Length: 157
Image 1 (cartoon, helix red, strand yellow):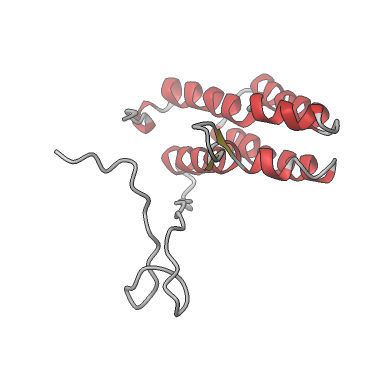
Image 2: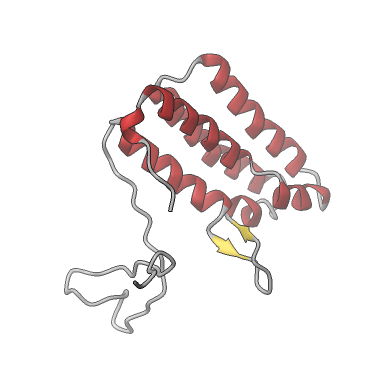
């Protein structure tokens, strides 16, 4: 039995060839953002956004995963504000799922803490490597979905 869980999905264009343009550039990953308003679609969007922000790349020479939150956070202040806006999208989707207001405030507090500490030069960049507010927010959303929408539960492989 072949384990194909770690093989990337290569994008296809209209002609059926993989890659983009005439050179056939491959190796780019495709993220699926479903457009529905049902809990399953929202769960998949939030998981994809968390993946992009926190775990989309591997640091060369290590097995440690980083994402846009760490990379864009290297730009002083503005980078942290951009990633805070992207993290706020996860909270907005949580609001659409009907999470209680106290959980939404808690999630926004995590993003605010991440943004405030991340804005400090050097210390904030190291902090962004360790503290993953979006992963913690995803965990909160998953707990809510597993309790109130069990049909969205996905068995992790």
